[in-house]
Image (cartoon, rainbow, N blue to C red; front, top):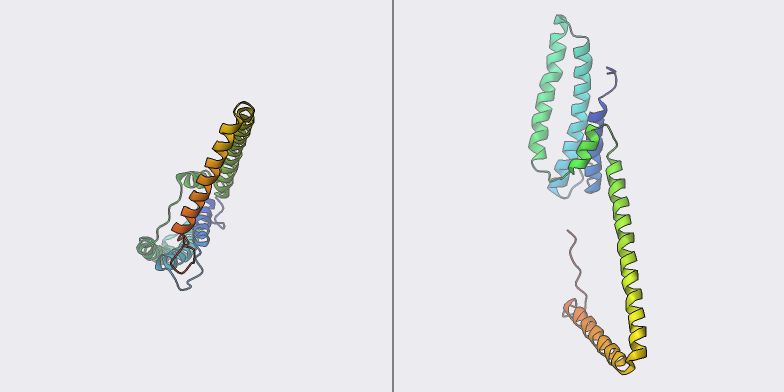
Length: 189
């Protein structure tokens, strides 16, 4: 391992923390949600801790009994930073999928996980769209065949469908309207 370069897995930890912070709308210590402020502070502490670890690595690689004091100072600072980080981390609520942690352990980019999840969602969406289109086509074909055999019944069915759809729309609008006429908006979670 190169003694002048930080460990790639520790750099990946910072990348995940920074991505989590930016994904949660954290802005370097700006006011707002205390959890987001804690997350920004933890991210800063992670970067500071990585600097201390790098310094410790350099000191340990050239250790001699005369350099014991310069080794103990960063070691004590590291313990203090880890303690502070633990206290702040208790206030952060971030869930990292195990797949991302495993990718980092394997030395891979965590963005691969996001790309794979998106590609999987796109593929499933295309399959679902294909099934929906197939059912629409089947429904259309069945209605055409039924209309040839039972024109009066199909017309009655279409009238019932139209009435039912109009009633459902009216009911949905009345449930989402406030007394002053404004529409209700679902809160984001």
